[in-house]
Amino acid sequence: MEKVRCATCGDESDLLAMEPSYAWPDAYFDVPKEDREYLTNFSKDDGRIRNADDTERRHFLRVLLSVPIHGECQDVAWGVWVEVSGVDWERAYDLWDDPKQSDEPPFPARLANSLRGYEGTIGLPGRVRLTGPKTAPLFELDADVEHPLACEQRQGVSRERVVEWISAHHH
Image (cartoon, rainbow, N blue to C red):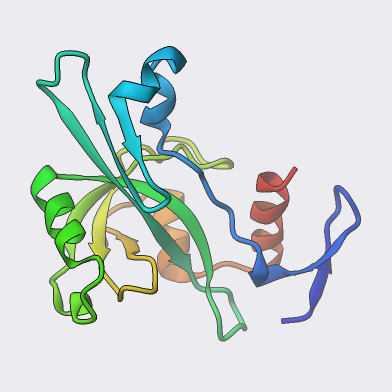
């Protein structure tokens, strides 16, 4: 894909070299800043949040939500977080370096970010598929979800739509 010029800053970039992405699940910001050090535990790929008395834990994975681009051979991928069950988080953790992890069946997850340009994305249901030790897991929204993001993931988007996403996330 050729380079595109950002309408905000004028820089030219390969459209697919940049992805809209989120550094943390939104729930991370619900934890008071002074408590994050001992109530959260995150790497670049996974994380957990616990309550103060450690009676509840939430489990997260960083995944790619891939969307086809009309007329292109390559998809654009959102770098997002999903919330998964403790059992599924443990299983993904156990398989993280396994070259055969892609043989594992997909498991349920819920989108854990409020995506710019959309309303109501937190909690959208889907499935995570492990892809390999050197690649990020993929997240596909459930087929019966009628949210605009889910429709775009199934039907694809124009290049112009991708430029909108990129511009909104990098400025």
